[in-house]
Image (cartoon, rainbow, N blue to C red; front, side):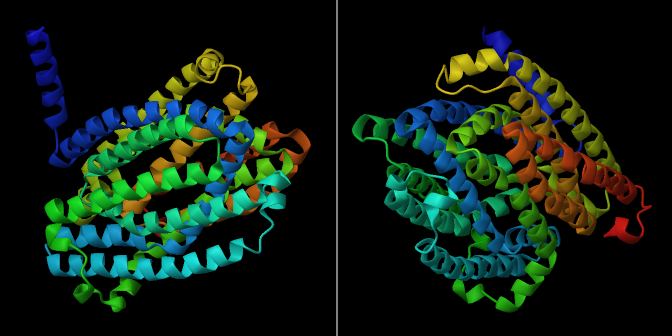
Length: 457
């Protein structure tokens, strides 16, 4: 047994540490993240039936919709996080550590000021919005909805500032460390949720409080540990805050900001459209299939995570050969995940029976369409991440704008006519036409030094 263990360890170690130093670093991160994400996925699957049992399928659908709405507040990042990531990489590569610390301190201060203003405006506005009508909810939930939304906004605001820590860990190509804290959050929330089910009756307010408090607690620990041990020389400090540097961060981040707006408008509107036209129960149906097949982009996210920063580093060092080799391996990963997804679709009826039993019925056509949607999402994220590392985002913004402007009216119309199936047809068809191929062509042109005009922007 010991010999087998030793052989497996030697085999894994040899393959993980072989190749270019940038590739080896990426493989180490990917291996650790696979283990951590596996735990996170199990926790996520474990939480769905428990949460539905705690607050009911109807209220779970409302909670998912509220979460989607709160995600719109990330508009106010205005590209600071992603702009900081690329600027930080450049400073570290050029060994300009003082400037890197100024960027970090300024980003934390600037985003904290913005989010305080946003919190005041968002919580104030929430008192004047008819949440019962907007969420198609029961009138008896009016008070509970208002307090849940205020708690969710507060949680999001705190997490928004503390989340810059993840940006920095990704920038130094240590996404596995960020995943450790994510996994700890999932495990802690599972434990808290189990305690809630045993000690309280179903309540959206308790759910919002428990989810927010666990996330905030772990992120505080993450920030303290990171700046005490790993990034001590870049610890944010008021004396290093220079708001004149905010413009530099935002100049790089503005394209990321627009892409972020478009991504949220495209991916986060589905829950709101479904609950408005079809009711909260259908949101639960959609999200069961979505969460099941979310395994695919989660796995690809693990593989892709080190490559934005790695491509940014390779761009600074003009290592185009490595970038071409990395692109080929990533495309092979997409093909593998598409095949895996097909097998998941075929096995979905059995998985649903084991997972959620008869609590929620998910039509097979919904699973098929969500699968296609997720594969297109993976394909698009590949090129978006590589182009982000290369610092060329303008064409992506144009294509995504066309996609988003087309999507909402078409999705609403088809959802109203064909129900959930209609919305998913729009989710698959529009990105297939508008955004699926331009990124492929642009990356190829950039790596072969043949990009001109809009292809070079």
